[in-house]
Amino acid sequence: MLLTTEPDTLPTDTGVQILNLLLPHHRTTDPTRATAESFPHQLRRITDYVRQGAPVVLTLPGFPCKSPNPAKTLGHLPDMGERLSLAFLDTLCTQIERIHPPGARVVICSDGHVFGDLIHVPDAHIDAYADELRTDIAQLNLSNLSVFDLRDVLGDLPRDMKRVYVQDDYAPTLDALRAEVRADATTLALYRGITRFLVEDTADHTGTRSALQRECRRRAYGVIRRSRAWGALIAEHHPRAVRLSIHPQPTGAPKFGIRLLDAPDAWTTPWHSAALREPDGSWSLMPRARAQRLGRLVHHDGRPSHFERSG
Image (cartoon, rainbow, N blue to C red):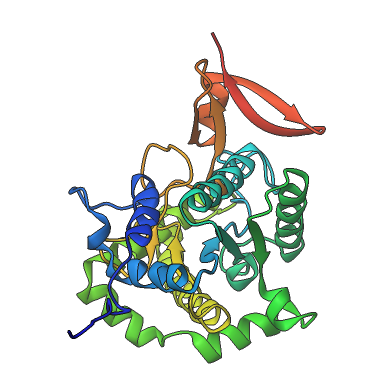
């Protein structure tokens, strides 16, 4: 009798179950609901970890720094929006552990220094933000999370030199990216979304609106190029990891878009907004100016933390 074994490329039941835990949080603009089998890239990598009996490693580029627009955020340090998002990611790892005992861990790849000059945020604020993330993870005992940033790759080199190194060695050319924006609807949506954020985040522009939009369109290409470069560098350091994204991703893409908290659109993140607690205990993200109209400000450890909706 000829015995056969299951090919290593086939997903395991556990791999499908793990991906099913991620699906309710998929950040996408696709209107149709997908199944685990619609994500072959992620399923293959998760299955590899399951077969090896190893923790599933997920990388999440993001948590760069706070938006510099005071109408959107409470300051330059993490607040309740980040703490809730970190707790969500840690809980997701705990849920994975219930069906896959080796568990999971999320490497938060904080990318603020990669494009700090393009988004007009001081490097000192970016350092303080990433350091506070590490402090929050430790204080909240979120043992499944870690933070990875350019300091882990290039040490104490000057920040401008780090940015030059990343862009020159890993970024696509500007001409190639322009061609992709013209040809690919997903890249075009990303370009438009980042341009919109840059316009909204610029609080001190003194020229015309049209001049600001032209400048932000130029900067958006730089942000995407360096974001791609950061992604390539992360892949080099974490080659087997499941790749998450805070940007909306189409079904079946190599990166899995993940929504951290409820928000009015698929682009809102904790670092572009403030958290509002509803009377029923649920949370949502929105610009600080709107949250301030709806609720009262709450402080945590002496700093502005979030808003609670007024009764």
